[in-house]
Image (cartoon, rainbow, N blue to C red):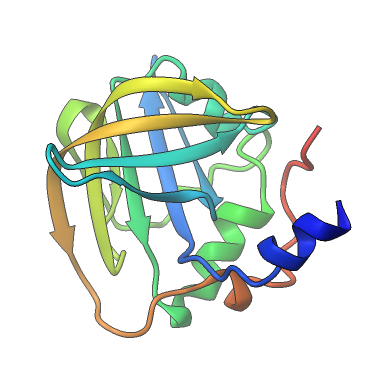
Length: 160
């Protein structure tokens, strides 16, 4: 694994919060595995940990919302990355907007996208959700929160 660390340790992706809603439940988590996966048609993929409550809700969801955060939103990243929805309502007190397909959009995000789930791909301890973007939005400006900015946020759910 040390050889993989040489490569993977140099990556510094943008972090995002993914939210899911289905069956009267809502969930959200901090994600470091996400990115555009097709130009034409436009597609975006996010990878959710199987250990995570967000994954369990997303399995029944029609759409997911993906939110970019700015560096000054570390507290929001800590909420969605360091707490588990199993015992915390992460959405209490937040500015929320209902998006397409019942998606929960964080109104304070730097930018967001809601997409219909087209495919689910098992990748090991994470499942990839390929999204067909339906709606986009932009909020606050500033440099985006990256993995290096999120160092020290202890995951609410360890990887199994």
